[in-house]
Amino acid sequence: LSGTPVTAVVHTAGVLDDGVIASLTPERMEKVLRPKVDAVLNLHELTGELAAFVMFSSVSGILGSAGQGNYAAANTFLDAFAESRRAQGLPATSLAWGLWEQGGGMADRLDQADLTRLKRVGLAPIAVDEGLRLFDAALALDRATVAPLRLDLGGLQGTVPPVLRGLRGPVRGTARRTARSAPKGALGERLAGLPAAEREHVVLDLVRGEVAAVLGHSSAQAVQPEHAFQDAGFDSLTSVELRNRLNAATGLRLPATLVFDHPTPLALSRFLLAETLGVQERPDAAVAAVTGTDEPIAIVGMACRFPGDVRSPEDLWRLVASGGDAISGFPEDRGWDV
Image (tube, rainbow, N blue to C red; front, side):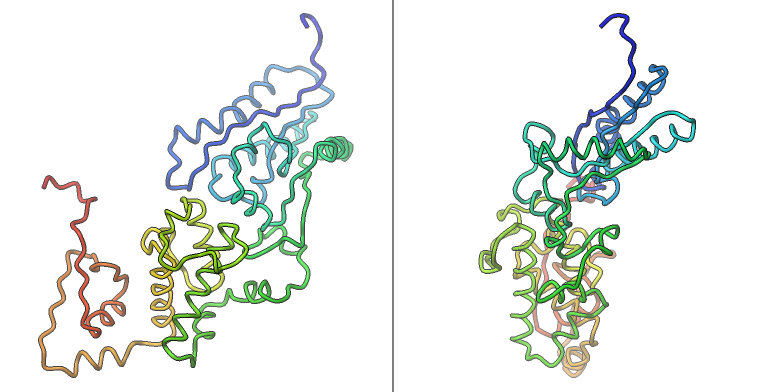
């Protein structure tokens, strides 16, 4: 109303434009930052003396959130800005909310896989009446930043955000094995002494189990070994999540392009097996088989690229020793006029 003094500000605006870091252009960053950073700065400059200056932030800025680097940055600014206003003697509270279960907002963009991912890091949806009580309780604390969350500690699985690791109690069964699998070469220790055929089954079962967890399937049996990841519903975010889970489960350092380079569970399991054996043991038998023959060896490569799916010198020796070939298509990223 005209002439009515503004005594409090509650800023709730936000926009999503999710994507992995490599895909975040300046335009996509600006789109997400503007309604939070620019809007809050404008409110700070245009409002006078206030009783309350409340900003709706997000727990994504505290815990991190796959595919939301821009959104996490925008909300981290709000948390920091609340501290800055307080240092100036001005009221400010930034509420780093968890997910609300009410539909109609940004949460409408979340599918079942997204909700399952949040559950694995211990976040449960907040009911509307519960959220209103948390709002009142947070303001009563008189602190710059408060994180109103509903935690489900029993749902914590796999890679847990560092902030929450101290809250998780003893882990049993499969979860215990996952939590303890971080030491480098853990998969190699598990495979040591197993016959070659059994090794392949163990690694494939591991991959299918992690794929099932990422996609929200109740059983690894739902994952077909030769079904392409893209056809199963994988995108850039779920691909990175699978890479992270396999990093933890194997002790390897795997590339972010893992799913795109090895597009089926079977292909991925074979790659992991080769990588694990490369870490644990040198393929001396393969080298001996090559050097002990009188046949000429021809290895054709181009610049610094390995052929086909080969990713290391050890892989190349294994390929040669097995008598295979690795003819790959002409690379499309050279910019040459052909």
